[in-house]
Image 1 (cartoon, one colour):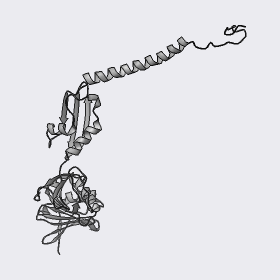
Image 2: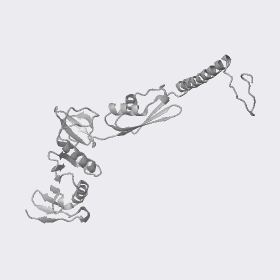
Image 3: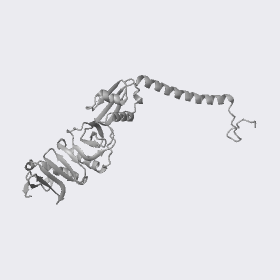
Image 4: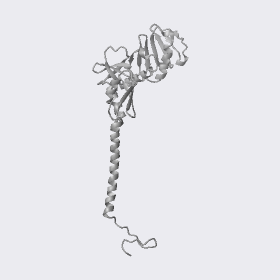
Length: 287
């Protein structure tokens, strides 16, 4: 049998001929051609993105405290930027870092060139002193919003907490963490009622014996944070009682048979045993 010849299926040994120089060159050139085509496709895509997917419109929604221009400036976006290169997380982070009242940011993209920025703003709910003597406004989650004048009387004063190294947009840091956590619990529950605008002071000097001052009428003793939702329902029932309109002390520590006690400035009055049992009637007790 001659070398390199195939004798067929009946027997013998097949011998593969080694590739010639021309075949080796064709294999290498085929791989290079495929790589070139891939690079060409990527280049075309980048070119099209740069030409056809530019930002042509920036829409701002949900803003009341800040203007559209302020939100757009804080976002770092500009008309003509590449739409596909917009990082939602980066844009949201920039806005929240620059605009303290912004609590949440959602960024959307729509072809061919629209970016929608939807913000959710928070409200200041109380004023607090800082260690350097300044006054700061804070929201219900404990975020510092801005420095205020010492006479920020339109907000409840948070007593018993002193903020360290305040910075707008940062979470409040203080040594009295238990007191701050207790205040946040109370505030978040008060936000669901109509009473928050009437609270002038929240005293958490003793987190186990918190005191609310309701306008000039009532001093509300809450005790600790235990059963706080129940206490708030109870408070609603008590404040609906016309017989306590003269003002006094509302004891919601629930130390007396799990019941609240209302004490006018002149005498002591019993209140409903539970918030569900409120009938609008109270009975007066002697001191």
